[in-house]
Length: 119
Picture (cartoon, rainbow, N blue to C red):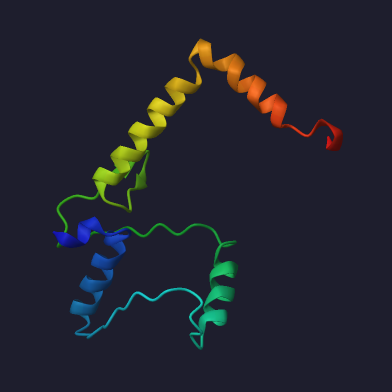
């Protein structure tokens, strides 16, 4: 399924199923931000207000999807391959960071970059 390569593909599947159930015809178009779209400011304001609302996690029971990836009870809203690459990078970055030989040099580097006069 090609749409699984998109971010937020489960939301797109849900929209598609709802549209089909309601016999709606939708034309979705990805647009860039701040291109002088008439209602862009209204959308931005509503999105900022929505950030302060409690999180809403819909119970997606999509008939067109066999499995949805989860990590620690959270939906993985990106291609699984990208997610696994990010997890691998984070894992090895943490391992490298906590090697004994790196602890002192990183600490020295950080202490040199702190502007002690302003603290």
